[in-house]
Image (tube, rainbow, N blue to C red; front, side, top):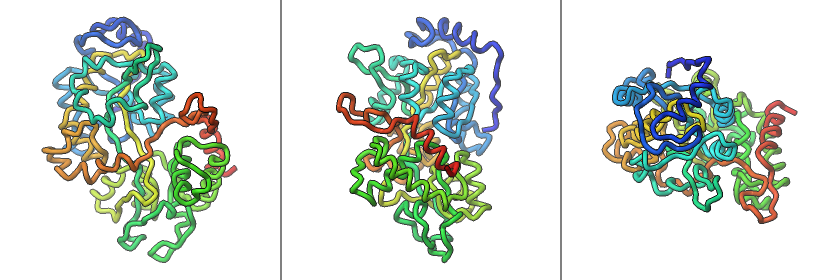
Length: 401
């Protein structure tokens, strides 16, 4: 993606006017009631590799046809973490849409940053995987009428994988996340110290908790995002131990790719996107989901409460569920389509692609969600460590304090 984000000085004013006047909307933050003419542009905050226009690889382009069909030019701001996405959307800056993961989506909903959507204007919503259609991370009863409202359209989902250098592991996939958490000698005869990476984001504490779920059952962890004080402290201790092994905390996918290519990194948590690009370039790289399972992401295209281009935004949400778009994106990123129809008849994904990318692994994935003080059980009296402390404590860990 080589498009440069264009900021306009008066966009904050324009956003309010456009949201009120576009289509059949009733004002900023209220869903459109009917689709109107496109405004000529749609501005999207997205993960790297999620909005491709053919400039990276001509075979992967689901932007150009949309622009030709609708007259809506797609502008993309790439974000490296969920926290960055939340910050960008809260600041406004003329964004229409964001491809939010579960650890961002509820923060955006509860903070009033995104608006409920009118599913009648997205006919293809009925084709979305039933496991995703009413998922808790993009629905909520925010108006108190007892009915859940939808705050976006599912986009893609998948797991965070253990990416490894096949030469370092003798061609045999590691079976445990222990290769990035515990100091050990790798099959190539060298230690893993200084040869592993970890994700540069507070949500990575859940990866440590997931590892402890399997290896320290006495802690009683049942949900890696709902940690009491003792469980949270144990996860932090594991991360402090890991810090002595970590060469870099990564958040930029392309820097991680360079590190695996040029800096001798042997193993790290990663996304299928990096794995695919490295393998396509001939690097000795592969990935696996270890025995402990994996954390993962189910991403939703959500609309800013004051989206300046609401008609183009709805057009993009509908377009994004097209089986061709869904299949091409899944082939490029290594993810699983939100629309199962994309799993067959796609030349780039192939009919085996959804299986390879983990379509049947849904139950093994602990999807990102924002930790809550009530342990996701309101009224239960349970107390868990809330996300704001995940942020401060993780910064302390990677800062070496």
